[in-house]
Length: 303
Image (cartoon, rainbow, N blue to C red):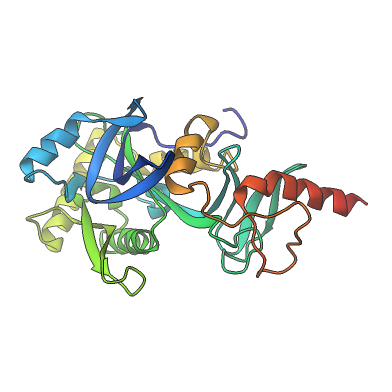
């Protein structure tokens, strides 16, 4: 196994609730009120629709508000990885990822392990440079039991809801999360920050038309059938855990540019001059100057 390369679940396509559009000469992210399922192929800067998208869209009257899914793993973290993440918008590479306690930060001397004060208190994060960032891998259909579709989100509502649901479903199913018939759903809510307009977030529920008890019975039957066939779910979870821990950053250079464009757009944070001090959390930085800032810090330590 190549060291330093995170081995992530195989991806067949993407699930999104928004897209990147061109406005006034700039490519900017735009939210939507429906799911879109795409391939991993772009044409004229747009992701090509996956055949499943048309199938579900026809069945739901034009807008996809729910997607029947299964999960690959019993461990909630392996299905949904969420962390605070800061991208350098000049290089489109992740610079720092953390969980609110510790972080891994790319600097002049390589990747360092440092305390993570969370975006509210970190001087590098002021101005929106650092965001909560989650990736959910799910299977759709029965074509490839180990292939997944990935949904990426920087929504606090989605991250909090998905984290809670996965932990709850793991608990009530007796650690049979991968055997449950589940469904991605899109919910809307209004907040004071949205000025009364609806914002949409992602949730996971049991499959439409089933009660929780029926879903649990189905999971038990599925679990027994897998065991009879020799399917080793525990070994699969361990293999995924080992692969994810093999790299400091999950995103590779091939995909980080499109991720940064959609979820960490240019201009999200205030700019900083080379002489700006960052000793106080009240002073802003921007991901486009992080490389220079980290280099200045390293030089200062060596003086």
